[in-house]
Length: 152
DNA sequence: GCCAACGTTGGC
DNA sequence: GCCAACGTTGGC
Image (cartoon, rainbow, N blue to C red):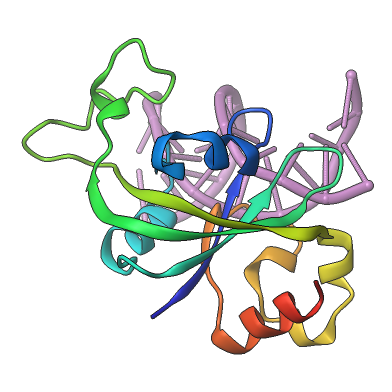
């Protein structure tokens, strides 16, 4: 089993939104970055666990845990001209973009803020804390996973 | 709202 | 293939 971190803007789709979805499950659409896509498409498997991260908000940080409920399949929002993630170069018979389904597991007791994570020597290898990092999906090693949840 | 960092596009 | 211009991400 693998571990991940996925970013979302709570104003768009936050941990509370996931918790309140039917089945507490939602597809994770809109990934439009090749590096993130490749990991999502090639490496994410059902049962993998995810740190749910809130970005672009008052206190950016990790707020909950989710699990992968379905592995990659074509991101249909890329086919829809009315969707803000529309990409005319993604075709039905050769999709460029993919998504997975993510299921709510639990919220953390508190937000583990980015500012706090940045201070930890143990996490210096994590892409999240590197300056200028913009990757919205990234792998998290088991040791870092355990360490981060130990901060809760 | 500002702006640094980064990715993508397209002219050459 | 280079690189300037532009768009986006996301912390602050």
